[in-house]
Every structure is written in C-alpha cells, then in structure tokens.
Image (cartoon, rainbow, N blue to C red; front, side, top):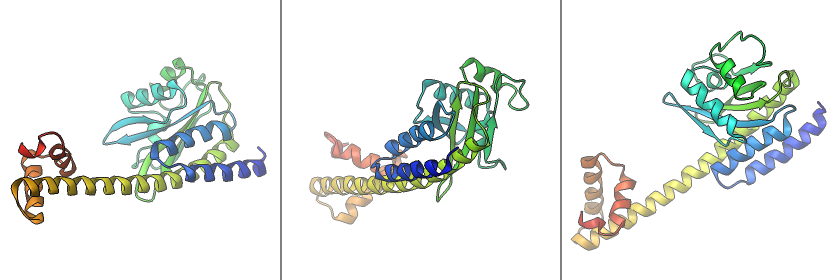
Length: 230
C-alpha cells in the first residue's frame, strides 16, 4: 500500500463527499469510494440495523443486498455484528470464506454460495448515534490484509463525518418543508372556518392526536383536494 497516494485519494474523496447535496448521493459515493480505494474490494454497501430490522443502503452490487438480507435473517454475520451498538468489537473480517468457519457458522457457507470470498465490516459512527456498518466484499478469498483493514478504518471515519453532515442538512431541509406545509394547512383552515392562527393550529393538533397521525401528514392531507372538509 502506497500510503502517500492513498492519502491524496482520500483527500479527494473527502472533498467529493462534502460536495454531495443529498444523503442518498453521499451514501452512494461512500460505497463507490470503498471499491476504488481499498485494495481487493470488489463491492461495498452500508448495512443499517434499526429496531432489529436490517436495511441495505447504496450497494454497489446485488450480492451486497443479498448478504445483508441473509445476515438479517440469520441474526449473525460480520456486518450485522459491526452495526450492533451493544457489541464490543468494531471491526470484523473473514479473510477466507472457503475455510471452515470459526465464527458465524450459519452465515459463512450461505455467503460462500453468494460468491463472497472474503469480507470486512466497519462500524460507522455519527455525531449522534451508531448508524450501522460500512461493508466491503471481495469475490476472492485472502484479498483483505491488515493494510486493507487500516484503509477501511480511515475511509469509514471520513464516511461517518460526511454522513453526519448530509443527514443534518437533510433534516434541516425536511424541517423547513414541514413548517411550510403546516403553515399552508393552517392558512386553509383559517380561511375555511374563519378561525385565528392559534385555533387553526389547535385543529391540526387535535386531528393529529385523534387519528394518531403525524402533524405533517395531517397537514399534507388538508392541503390535498377537499382536505379541509374532512
């Protein structure tokens, strides 16, 4: 591994990540960067474990999603464990899936059938919580070395920062859109029922509580055709 070249490519990747304008685009760039920067990496993706359910984000190859789904079904695997916040380890590697498995006895033979030769999973940190795992796959066994682990750690660290920034921006944009939608719904209610701003908001909140529906969804319903009359 030429670490000087790697550092230059990482710096370029960091700039590219911060230039992305959406969370999905950021995650896709992270997965592509893993394939481009880590020796031996044929495919990559991000496994998210939320409320016990697995989601596969930004996979560069269909078998990445198949692997994530398999780990979710079996409740085991290097990437599944890397995404668990209660697990003490933060890096998992299977150097050779053709060898008898020392861990993940059910997952390894099934992953081998998917065409996986070796794989690594890295925990992703954000400013607020542990997101999940950045996963790297090789179709050949023995492709990931200690240098690969180090490169993966560095990439995962940059990826976590970029993800946190993208998610913050997305949350801010969503909050602005929600506030605008609620304001529009309140305006409709004020005009329809000749009520004050506070009364219009109370009507929104009451409907939200009565139907157990989020406030923004109630507002979206009211802003739709005939919404205020329902």
